[in-house]
Length: 284
Image 1: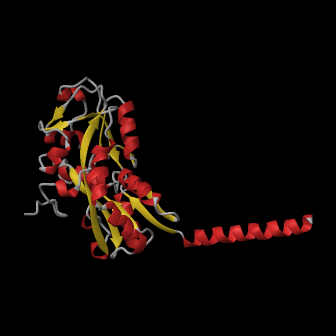
Image 2 (image 1 turned 180 degrees about the horizontal axis):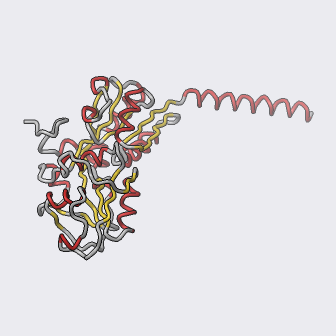
């Protein structure tokens, strides 16, 4: 009797495993890699997208815009997240890629809260990152050395900042960090520190800087009065299909664009009063 029961249990267990195996085999996944500025939005959208789709997964990773563009071009991932146009990145054949603009993000300089400066001119900010101004007392702040923290090479946030503040010159050699969250943490903990992050990463742990008396706000981004902003791109290698298309359509849906995008610190593209091309020129 016990032997028969064991045989029956073995058969039942085998059938369960077989069923699980089939369910796993039928699972679909999408991988999106790249911009850390865009990562919080894509991760949150992915969580909501997966809720009603058992067996369908969206894997989201950072690594920077350059990584996202190179990975999607090579076919290693389904979506390359980027703060820059593909045309701006050396070694990328933009003709292969399809651009899906899912949001706009403002980028702001941030400083340690003890610095004692609230506003700088664009030229003063440029001189800091070129190493020409090295102490905050030169700018009305404390007698304290300026500690520069840059994003890593290949970061779309860095490229955008250097384009609009440094006029495409390279910032002075300094400590670099891949993660926007880590940049904010280091600036918060380091006396005299300055860097730059997306609006979506700003917290009360750091102070932001106005530039030429213009504050870093969404409203000023939409009119281009605050020039340090970029589109948030989700690139695909050719037209998206299957689950990748479903996920992108969901990200661009009215539900996500009208609610989640703004809640997470981004700006819907539909709210922009200006449009810029890959050269940074305003499109009439």
